[in-house]
Image 1 (cartoon, rainbow, N blue to C red):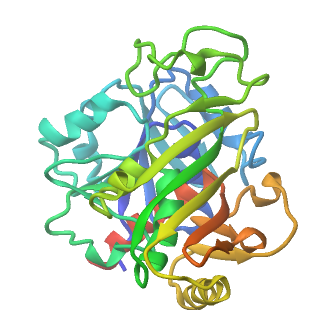
Image 2 (cartoon, rainbow, N blue to C red):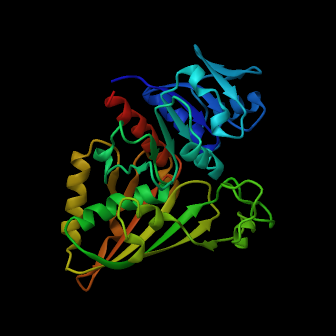
Amino acid sequence: MKKLRVGINGFGRIGRAIHRINELQDAFEVVVINDINPDNHNIAYLLQYDTTYGRFHAEVTADDKSISYDDKTIDIYHEKNVLDVPWDDYNIDVVIESSGVAENLNSIKFKNETNVKHFITTNAAGDGVKTIIFGVNEDELNIDEHKIISSSICDTISLSPILKLVKNTHKVLGGFLTTLHPYLGYQNLLDGPSASWSVPGDINSHYALGRSTINNLMPKATSAVFAADHVFPGLSDKLQSFSYRVPTSIVSSAVLILQLEEDIDAEDLKKRFEDFASKQKYHVIKNSTKPLVSMDYAKEDYSVIIDHRWTKVEGGKLLKIVYWYDNEWGYSNRVVDIVKLISTKY
């Protein structure tokens, strides 16, 4: 398996989580990091100290060009646009685009003239983009055809494997998904404008997101189902989604309710999930019946943990499933898995 040379564009919560996970797995070599934070010492500090995941394993130092730890030195750039970084100077195989900025995705899709073999992005669509969700379609990755690979979003990589196992035997007529998602970095401690993350400088039309994150539950739309359309075409015509942004810092939960055409047995379904988990190559589904709360799932590397205490069927055809996922760590593990999957094909 070839050890790929990787650049990370955007070294925020997801970029740093990906880097930490790779340090544990030694799956690829991080050669270059690009982040709009102009202070390399602050970048080193944020890597070393993390309120959610604890201290980094080594002391991280910085100078005006790089950060260093152990025997590694990683060059740092501060470009606003992903294509302004000299990736080719470093013979980069894969760029992980984790900034979430829409302009970067558009640049990759329409202006890319680099020699980078693959770009991995968050949720994306359109010609030339292949969405890969483990537990659903990872076998479809073709490195000759798929140069831009979407790793989707945390809400969708947790939902999709569940849907896949249900849809294998039962037709979904309709349903509802409600997610409870921790606050994100662009939200406010006190009431203010709802600043956009993906389009810096814009104000979200959903003004409620600008309210105090520590005092409110915020009802909002979610793209979880629309993102799943990339692997289940037409799903959003049947499944409606809704979200609360909640005043916690990590771990999401969700309630999925499906109306099925045929009767389904809850115990048979649990057995199907258990069989899948026992044979899976990647950490996609974990099954649990333990009486846990959200923080007990922090740093879980699975895409989804199904809380089978609440797996219920009403009237034979109405199915309810409750599940959890670490919205940073679980998602970032699947990004690392995509890089590993690419490396097996070279």
